[in-house]
Length: 457
Image (cartoon, rainbow, N blue to C red; front, top):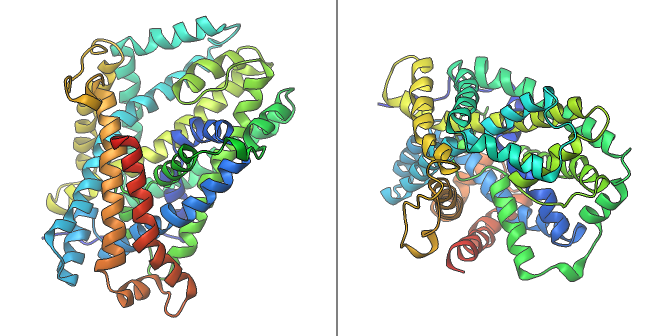
């Protein structure tokens, strides 16, 4: 017999929004979105991103939070309940299972990258970036990730912080953490963005990010915008469904989802404003991902005045973004186990987090001892991928699009219009009809385009 979530609710809409925004805001906002914008038409990409996010990601986000509040349980048991109530096929439990298993897998490797961010806070504070060249920064990063013991240590510290927060419960743990950490993240980001306006590369960076270069827009640009929007708002991994299960019935899901999507985009834009002026000020090559974060930026931090504090603030910002996302990945799994095994939550958080740590060892070793190990060698697209690459590719390009597609179909076609209208408190509202149309027709096509582009092309 399952234990309903109803007694465990957010104390306020603000707490829910901080948790949900914290889940959505992650490493991709900071190290991927600004570069994508700059390389794909600047302001033109941002406009396309906003349109596609509104038509594809936002409807799915609304549906995931709605399903969570309707079920009031973990994603797996929420889907079981809704299937029974709607006399639907058991097949739809794949939504709950896919999101929960996907969250666990992502947590296993995300915690390793989160550990990198923590390590670089220490390096920044100790002045390790001073006078760095590109070669020295690359060597510093390589020396760290090729040492499995060091990487595992920082992965452990990152997961320990995540487990500690989740173990304390919804209100005493997650809520207290996000209400503190998310304002801190915005404070650090705004502070860095303000500083960036004083650098000589600010103008060039703003042209790179915001100039409307429609001639650079291609079909790949649109696919990139769809994919970034879908992955960025944290749908299809059970996090928003779980957080929705704790949401008071009087809170507007539609308005809350818009706030989450806007805040998520704002963080990404502010990250670009904060980061790329430094890159252009020192003649560095703009890039994306770990190369930008752990090689290019340390060079800038080692050159500018006050680089120790600015560098530490940036990597603290990165760590906060990673931890708030990691919390939302651990919670759905802990919630599901808690419903079936009635032992103290602190032990469940430790067990599940410990299992994620063990699973993450494959990612730790992918950058050193197992760098040449390709577990799916001979399987075409996966032939040359490390353990980390396989996990990342599978969750990002197969699990998440599949869950997102099924969720849009279930909420759009299996749930009756009246049930969804009542759940959203949207009786007679125009936006409900627009949402339902997007969920039934636009979102499925958008999600399928991600799958086709990343897997079949």
